[in-house]
Image 1: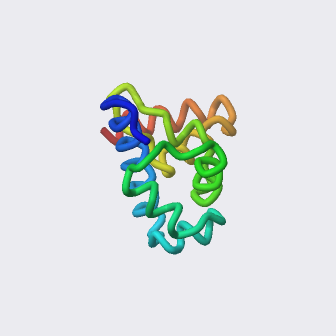
Image 2: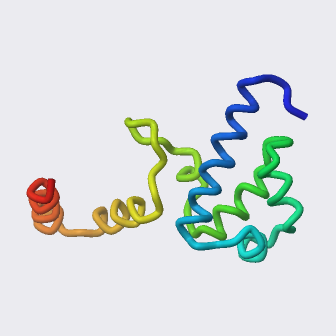
Length: 112
């Protein structure tokens, strides 16, 4: 059960993040359960913020979204979560040549 207000806040932030990813992927709660291999009741229990999910549950949810676990918890400097599209952009950027990186950075500066 919930031990203190801090833990409740952490669970709330995690559920909010999972829900944003679920909406971003156009998954229903049922589809998230199927894709993660978890029961619908497990997902609903998480949404009710009864307790912090175990690592297996977190891992399964991340697999459903095709993201690494760290991305579920990572917040940017603006204290907002990175979307899967932003993560993909970062991943793709790291695979570019030095020239490609320079050109993309220049392009992104001009798009502001």
